[in-house]
Image (spheres, rainbow, N blue to C red):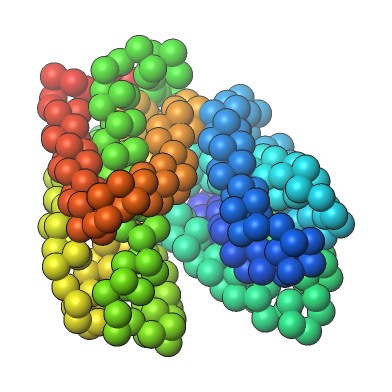
Length: 404
């Protein structure tokens, strides 16, 4: 029964995180909103950074709720807010309402639904934590299926009814996930009860770990935070400039860009799963340092190519590395600070990622406007990632290890 709860919680967490990826549906509906209300693309797009900002603000409180009350309350609340946010957006007629519903409500729902599954799964799978967390967070890029379903509904039903149907779909899927998500019993240590094995466990029980206050007072937390932020920002600088770079170079038709858009989520998903699995065998810090180092090479090579196949390969590798960050940092946080307060602790570390989707494209665009060169933007991204490698290695030194 406990084994069933273990895998059921992984499936439930996957479904919740799958639904949170719906925050990226902004481009799907933006064209309809622009045409109906005469809003500019930037005015509509602002709902996305507002949502990401609220997502970030909610991460730590959501983690604290999970640590104190268990997974059920924040998971169910997140599922409800996510669904209500999409339903309420369907009644938008002014920008303030759009920002409140798609920005604030959906951002709150995402924070409450995304963070709780991570400590739950980390506690259930101390024996294969990297792989389990990789499988869990693979739900986020898999949400491209939700975005495509929404895009297919708009021509048939209109954007308002499409949002309402999407709201119902998200409610059903996320509630199933919330029901399945359960914390393990107190004595759970190695994926099975202690009385089933006489061997000494190499990982601590989830009653051990640093408090939130202890973590934020440690230098290791800040090294981890900035390494996460810089690595994710560097990757986002490339992703945010792909379409413009391709148009400037020529030879990249919309059909070819569509091919890349189909392949990139697969690379993102595989990066999360494979890197997590490798980190269980090789350690978080070595795999993370190698992954970000590969990203440095990709970012340095990207502006030198005009060949579609080569550019597509580089982009897929970068998405693989980017996906790996989302699997490795929660596992590394659990290793560094324990799992007792992992909800709040990883919530704080995770805010580093929430900076990247806004900062990366903004920084890349500004560099291109100032210098007239995409190469300069991509080389700058490579430098940020190189600094991130140094911070990972610095934080991974034994003398920086936080006390449990």
